[in-house]
Length: 206
Image (tube, rainbow, N blue to C red):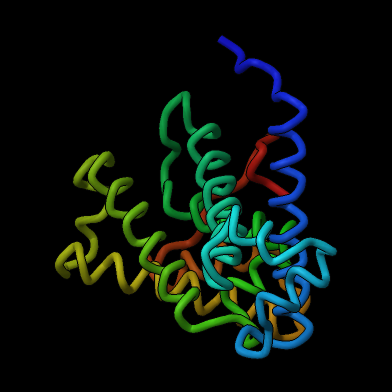
């Protein structure tokens, strides 16, 4: 059943929230996380401090809201693509989905992971990805990840740390690599296998 349409008040509230989020993201990229204040955010959004505190408790909270929106979008895209069953070498497609989403949302990912962001927020991103990866591993056939002779909790930290560091490097350092190339190189580095042949139309293929 479709959700009921938003009321005028709900639409206005969502718009205000998005104004605050966008202002915070833009300012962090301009000035760096530590230099940005709540007053900066409300001035940029042309809203009062009281309005800010209706929606968020502090600077970290408003940026985490932006990050969560992005992470949830990435996860929803990945899960919707595999409703008809998992393809072989599923890990590769997971990496590709992350790089494609980062490519479309470079501003957000630079706040999440880049030099202008916050180490605390980057840590929260990795913890979120680790929890999601752990849930995904639990749902996969055991044979998919027994190639690694290490405890699952170590595997999760290695994979999520590698993803975060490589996405950060890709966005911060000038290069011509595509999402497909980055996902393939990460897959080969972690799994010591060639990425799958990409034949035929697919929402995951550039």
